[in-house]
Image 1 (cartoon, helix red, strand yellow):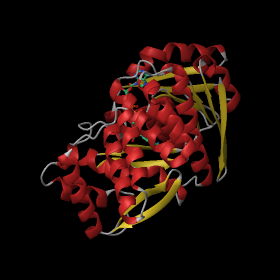
Image 2 (cartoon, protein in one colour; image 1 turned 60 degrees about the vertical axis):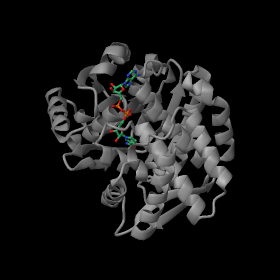
Image 3 (tube, protein in one colour; image 1 turned 135 degrees about the vertical axis):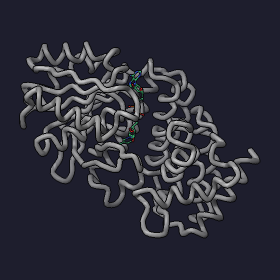
Length: 369
Ligand SMILES: NC(=O)c1ccc[n+]([C@@H]2O[C@H](COP(=O)([O-])OP(=O)(O)OC[C@H]3O[C@@H](n4cnc5c(N)ncnc54)[C@H](O)[C@@H]3O)[C@@H](O)[C@H]2O)c1
């Protein structure tokens, strides 16, 4: 099975190719899409041990000189310091304007390597080779790159669209459970944003996805990548509809920040955020209660039950502060992506009073179980 999706917009145009076994042909595909004689293959220690040799071999066989650069696995590598070290290594390796970066890994490597490609010699090409479910369905597409600063995530960054995205779902079976759930939360978000048909398919596939059945995984990756491609093509620089991709993330990010990054798994936090947004849509947009219940049951079926993390006494004010401090927040209100039905997106500005009331209700309902 092979699916080729095309991103086009604001001066960029590239393919997202999804196929089982694609990793074997990364070399020829990188050579064809970049024409580079030399690449920096940026990866992390875990992914390097699993797939580094195969990808490096494929690049060498295609006549591309490979400079392998492996960072420690985990979010702490997405830093200003590590990006500086990588840039120095790229210059020592003699990379020139026509050369490229291959980002082999999850969202951390994709954001970090993409950022280095964006600033090295004022921009060289990057090929994204995503190896986590989250990166395959979300972060590898759309050109957002960046690193974290001590005061917050993704505070330094640039839009830098890849020259190609090469997605091989066969790399996913060994992904740790926590990372699998993070990806599933994004898959659920994508189906809710996409259409009634996508929600129905995901309901049918939920058990198979938990068991990582290859056909169900392939369908989910194609569905979610397809949604992302359509949205970022329509709005490459996040001036409008791309905000919809934030569905569930407004409260989700706040939960992660309040609990301390890494304490609540990303997927559980996003699922909590979707539950909150669904109830908010019911209250402020008059969305059908059955639509809220349907989203909640699908999240449960995907193993994304409520985390309970955000409902401790006193957390409500902290959540409000974290949402207001988010770099996507505008002035004194907090902007939510809401859905009044499958695929029916509507932004909503919640002022402090509305937010406090709904958070209180939500926290009370969550702690009642
Ligand atoms: N640029 C965007 O649009 C965008 C969107 C969403 C998230 N992000 C960013 O993505 C990052 C999170 O990405 P992530 O969830 O992929 O985490 P990650 O990159 O840290 O990967 C998670 C873990 O899985 C390991 N791993 C990767 N592939 C594997 C495989 N095939 N088998 C076994 N283990 C594997 C990694 O080594 C790591 O330890 C965050 O920094 C977030 O800000 C970016």
